[in-house]
Image 1 (cartoon, rainbow over the protein chains, first blue to last red):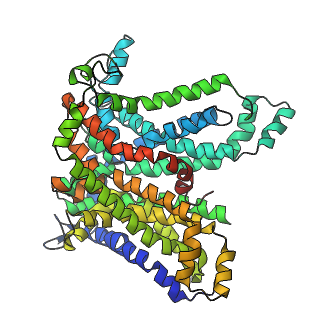
Image 2: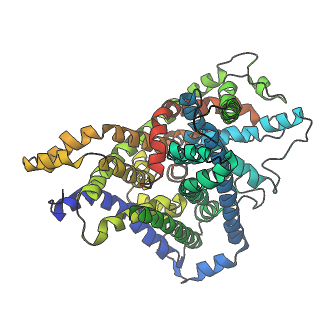
Image 3: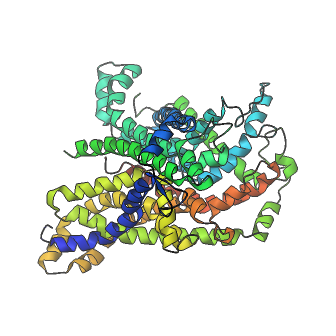
Amino acid sequence: MHTQSFRVTLALLAPALILFFALAIYPLIRLFALSLFATDYGFDGATWVGLENYADLIGHRFFRTAAWNTLVFAVLATLSQVGLGLVLALLVNGRLPGSRFVLPLLLMPYVLSTMVVTAIWRAWYHYDFGFLNNALRGLDLPPVEWLFNPDIAMLSLVLVDTWQTTPLTFLIILAGLQAVPEEVYEAAEVDGAGPVRVFFAITLPLLTPYLFLAALLRSVDAFKIFDKVFALTGGGPGLATETLSMYVYRLAFRFFDVGAASAAAIIMVVISGLLALVYAARILRKKT
Amino acid sequence: MSVKRFSPVRALAAYAITAIFLVPILWMFSTSFRLPIDYMSTSNMLIPSQVTLEHYRDLLRGDLLGKAMNSLIVAIGTTVLAIAVAFPAAYALVRMRFPKGLDLTFLMFVLLVKLTPPISLAIPLYQVLRSLGLLDTLAGLILVYQVYALPFAIWMLLGFIRDVPVEYEEAAMVDGVPLLRRLRSIVLPIMTPGLIATSVFVVILSWNEFAYALLFIQSPDKFTLPTFIATLITEDETFWGQLSAVGLMASLPILVMVGFVQKGLTRGFSGGLK
């Protein structure tokens, strides 16, 4: 199939190239240029400030809090989702009557719109009538300020994200478990290895690439988090759940400090670029 | 840990966790039919004492159908554009020879776009849309959704095109069948299931999207369902019924497609890793 001329290839790629140029390459260049100015919109009347926006950001308490919160959220969300996904996959793997129905049902939270998800959980976190506090009171436990206690709001955010996206990590890890050949387990059993030994000596090592993939996908996504923060906490109470995406949004679209917002956005692009490199290295290693 | 052996305890645990995962969705379903006096309560009764359709009536009296129509237009437009652009690109990447690893460079760039936080592109995209006169239009939204849809569709279609046996195409090529006809009569029919799976994903992606819909659409009559739902989310718990009703109606079309999704999900998200 290699006899086509390069012109045909280019023609096939052209629509994609044009869209990527208009929607990613040009915008990224423009974003970087904007980050070197003090401006409230574009380049008209903008003042050149060089790298000052970057220096200001790094010294700014709000930005550093947002960066720290994003890291905390990404770590907590990734760990809980991969952990819970692993437990679920181990439970569902193998003979499970009705697994034809269990799998699609388990997937449901993942395909819901994040706005639907936040609508449900805003109600569940309600102090007086929310499902969770009702349940706590039923157990004679004190109710919790899920979204308005600065020490708890971040965990509440992680809980919603975990409910919504554990189906994805679960499916990835399940695919990994199903790729382990049956004979491996039979051999181990013949050798008299107990279940715990089998798990740590066989299952876990064979599962590592899948756990890694699930963790990578989730941390990349967790790093972007915007919708849930926007609709659940608005970044509050105080700055307790302010994340980088929320910070860029506020700076650009609420305070019209477009220069500084662009600098913060470029920092986000660089970080996601590094994550993309890890991802890419992984794919390339697999190919060779 | 043996895979073959059936363990009732393990099965029960699996069912129990599945049930726990479903409670919030059941709550939404039941609340959409409950009277406010029922759900503004300190007990967790999921079964309504009295079934009401008032929340659905209130929504239909508002502009729910208009919002649903906007969502539908954007979802279909985004999907058609993404597949039409991604398919030839993915085909070229799989089947054609590229000088100096240009194909890999392109794929890595696509990956970078896929991983870039949408909010960081929002500032320049806002200005691009405004200068094109596409701000506050559904067409503009369809265009910017390609930022999500295109990388996703290209990566997912790559795998499906690799699965098409190259021999059929080679035979047709020897017979002098031109490229476009080969694509139409050989490649596309074989990979129809893959095209459908990819389309389902892109539909879900654009149906659910919130950030760009929030930033680039200002007129309420052009809101999609997620931005409409966001306007209903308030501290006022009396709205829970309406919110649940609109949430359910926004989710039903997607939940119906979930069967399709399950098969393609790991494939689509592992980005050619497996």
